[in-house]
Image (cartoon, rainbow, N blue to C red; front, side, top):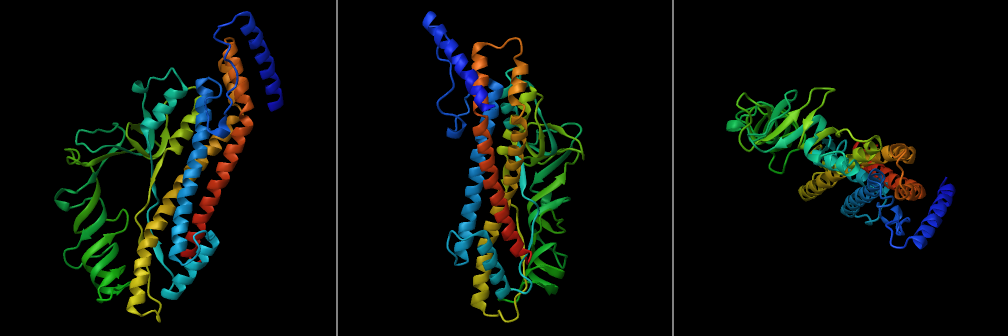
Amino acid sequence: MIHGSMLGLGFLTAAVTVGCVENPGTDFCDLGCPVEGLAEGNASISGLASVDAFFAAVVGFDKAALEVKAGVDAELRSLAVSLDLDAGASAADIRAALAAKFDAATEGGLKVKYAPPRCTVDAKVAIDASAKCDAEIDPGMVSVECKGTCTVDASASASCDASAKVMCKGTAPELKCSGTCSGTCKLEGDLQCNGTCNGGCEGDCTVRGADGQCAGECVGSCTGSCELKAGAACDGECQGSCEYEAPDGGCEAGAEVRCQAAADASASCDGSCDGEVVPPKAKAECEASVEAEAKLQAQCTPPALEILWQWEAGFDDELEQAQFKAWVEGFRVRYAGLLAASARAKLVLEAGAGLGDAAVGLVSSVQADFAGDLSLRASVGIVCAVAELESLGSLLQSGTGALSGSVSAVGEISAALAGG
């Protein structure tokens, strides 16, 4: 296929050369394929908007894959050094060192609880990608649909699609949260703590500090403050961020307005979408590149982690316990970063798979779109595009391999926590 395309390019180049000799100064004398292609990061291959937008998404995939891999590698290096391993230790070696550390200090290892990392896509990304690929799209006249929750604005005047439920996120009125609280819940009296109890615990406490006060999960009633699990209710004062359904008067001034679409439905979104983005309708050959751009530019936030454990019976030295607690705080940050990177890696992998599937019919789709009106410039552009398909496949394969390795590495760390 590539060989045939190069023959076609040779024929067209010869025709252009003759035309330039006979008609010097004509605008097709500079026709030809660029010297630098996809392998060098150049997506301007064909001069056809829909094709080059697709190539730009492929270049973006390769860049995103390298970014995610670099982020995972950095977290693994830091984790390895914290375990007295060489910075370049393998994920399997880190897993073994973690298991040994947990066995020495705890009974049953660490118990880590968290909500999945939140990944969002800015609606503007999908709109701009659609307009870049399809000249018939006016960015100011189209919108994006969001299957999930759309964060609109931090303004009391922000509004949602009529079909969506309006949720507010911010400081609860009088600190009384009628929904879910993220952060610290100040307890008044003896109350159940759905998280880490800091203070007195009338019952069993999984972790106690040097002062005998509870610093872990309290199976009983807690007095003091409670560091809540993600999405937990607060019976006291919510000294954090509260997410609650908007009252009749709307959200409080300064609160984040979130539009929650009904299950299996979507709602118009002009902010950031926490869920699947449905881009505006564009040419068929633009669908894959637009969907890929949305996933490639998604931002994934590290989750809040709740880490609990019980001390090993013989691990009772106060200094060693303090050192272990300090190490756990560093591990909390690194593991949260790895979870966010893994979530983004999965989105980037989905983008790469979509681009790979669409590449098969890319050229024929463009040829059909230009049928009956294929200029010499467009003909040369298509030949140049076909000549780049081999590089396209190589980029997708290398990026996919790098991302798969990163996801596997995070899986090794998670296996250590699961006691595997």
